[in-house]
Length: 423
Image 1: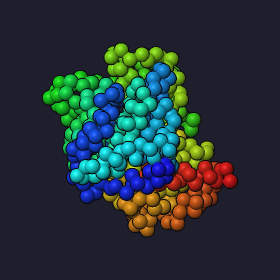
Image 2 (image 1 turned 135 degrees about the vertical axis):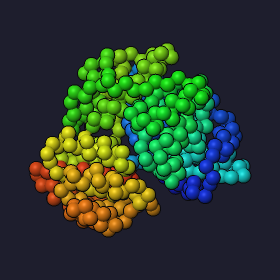
Image 3 (image 1 turned 45 degrees about the vertical axis):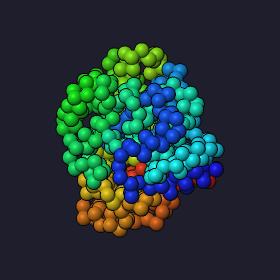
């Protein structure tokens, strides 16, 4: 089976008709010899910042000499981005071979595993096969019933920023969402939390007390952002000085600080991570599509909920003080579009609207209507190429464009923009 055939096969097993739970993934992994039992994990959950924190941790551990598996979702441009070792994506032929092995086991089950469960099993098999020293495992949705939560107590559970998202599945309050995310906290485990959300913080503290887990919260008083530009962010995180991460945004300094707090906990557990590895790793982080400057006048961001849009708006104000921007925007219909737009509108001169490549996408004309109600000129575009061309023309030589609203849109725009540059 080729990589493309494997991807198509995996996508054919949706989750909508399946009851949430860990029984399927447990049975599947048992049939595969429980590869998760032979691996050490850093388990990451949260609403926003998961991917960036994962990328920072992976880069630092790799710089420290560890062989690091990384499993994240969704992907931007290539399915194989989801499963990496030391920055190298899983080869297509390996993906195909492992899926055949997983499908043999799945075929003997009374209920076939879902898409995400298949991906999780493939990733764990691959990481064991390749003798990874550490695996950074990002939850797909929530925590308690997420397939990644099949693992035993990880070396560290990391909880990133909490906001309202996936409310139909996780709950309509920050406390309910935190309870779902906090499901990755295991009895007696070590936990690092970003903090900063009182409702969520109270839930995480309670769960840690009940499960006798050791909680460390990010100390924001140690963080000072020194500089913010299109080439990245410089900051201090006491006692570290003059750190730099090639990710753009104040929120990325906070994500890096959370990763460093996790590194300190790993050091306490006798992981060998030098100060040099910290600096070298952070300076080498690459996480496309998160406030990424594709050109000096064209930025791309995966903000896809109100919390993420707030962080994006804050960074754009810092990068382009006093300027109104041209936006390329696409949003999924199950997101809080009105709250997202309220963050964006004060910065918007004009918006060009696209339909993300997802069955859940909001139709462009509906989104245009919401923008016009807020007094912002909006125009629907037929596709990424048309949208990029129209946005750049509207921005002119002195303006700037930012494309955001959905990770699905993010990948489309990135591919189309880079294609234009090489044409």
